[in-house]
Image 1 (cartoon, rainbow, N blue to C red):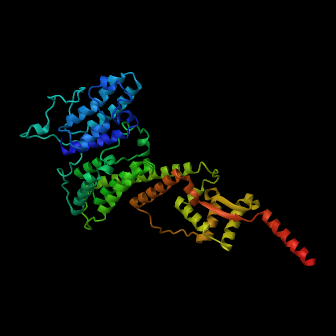
Image 2 (cartoon, rainbow, N blue to C red):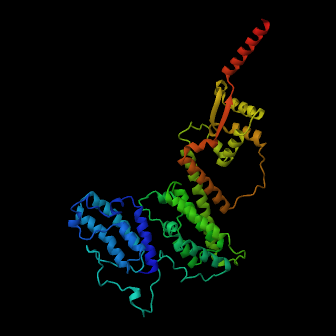
Image 3 (cartoon, rainbow, N blue to C red):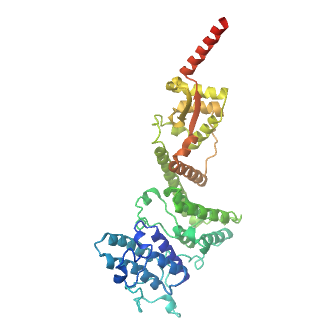
Length: 448
C-alpha cells in the first residue's frame, strides 16, 4: 500500500466516521449483547478496527483495505437481512464509501468475501506489479501529493513559495486538521444538500493544486485568495461549535504563519493569463455579494427573538460595525452627556417618557434620524468625503468574513448580543412626583 493510498484511505475512514448513519458500524459487536452474532458471522469487522489497521500499517495493499470495508457491509446484510433498518443504514454508508474509493489510485474491483481476504487475481494490473512499465497513467484530479511531480513551468520565487506553502498544508503532521480540505466537499455523501446553495464558490487543496499545475494563478496573491476562500467557505457553512470549524482555524494559522515569509520580489505579469485575472476579480465580486446576503440573513435571524424593527432603512445608512461601535460608546457615557442621549431617544420614542429605572434598548429599534442624531452627538457630524478610499476586493472579503464570524458567535450565544444594546437609567414621572413630594415635606417641616 503506497503512502498516497494510505493517506487517502485514512481520509475516507475519517469522513465515514462523520456520516450520520455510521453509529452501528463504528465498534465491534459485543457478544453479550448479541449472543448469536458470532455463530452467524465468522469474521466480524468494524470501522474502528479498520482504522487501527491503517494506523499500524497492517494493510499490504489497498485491496486488503477495500476487502475489510466491504466485509463490514456484507456482515450487516448477512445478519440483519436486506429489508431491515440496519441494512438501510448500511447501504447509505456503503454508498459514501464507494464514492470515496473512486478517487483511490490503483483501486480496482475487489469481490466481496466474508473471510475478508482479497482475491488473488485482479481484473486490472497494478502499477507497482510492472516494474518495466514505460507508459504511466496521468494522476487523478483528486489524487493528493502530485504537486512535486508536476511543478508549474512559470516558476518564480513567489510561485515556488506557493508550491512550498501548499506542500506544508498537506503535510502528514497536520493530518488531524487538513483531511476535510484535501478534496472537494461531496454534499451528497455527507448528506448536506444545502451546501451548494450557501457556498457558491467551493474550494479545496486538490483544486488549488490543479490550478497551480495548470498555471492558472497570475500571481501569488491569487493563490492566497483561493486558500483563504477555502477557509471562509468553512466558516460560512459551519457554526463555530463544530470541530471542522476549529480545524479550519488551526490550519489557517499554519497558512498565515507560512505566508508571512512570502518573498518580496514580484513575478513579471503574464499577459496571456489576464482573462484568468478578470475571472478571479469577477469571482471575488460574486463572493462579496454572497457574503453580504449571508450577513443580512444572519442579522435578520438574530433579531427574531427581540422586538420587531420598524425602521429597516437604518441598515442602509449605518453598517453593523458602525452601530456596534456607537452602542459601545454610548454605554460608556455618564453625567450630562448621558442625559443628552436620553433626551434624544425620548424625543423619538415618547413611550419611554413615563418609564423609570434601568431600560435595555436595542439600537436597531431606533429610527434612522435618531441614530444619526446620536452619532452626531457622540462622534461629531459625519463628514461625507468625496475622495473616500475604496476598499479592494481582498480587503472587503476579509472585512465581511470577520463580520460573519462575529454574527455566527452571536447567533450561537444569544447572551453575548448585549453589546449591541443600550442601557439607561431613565427618570420617569413617578420619580419626578417622588421628588416633588419630598420637597413639599421639607417645606412643611421648615414651616413647623
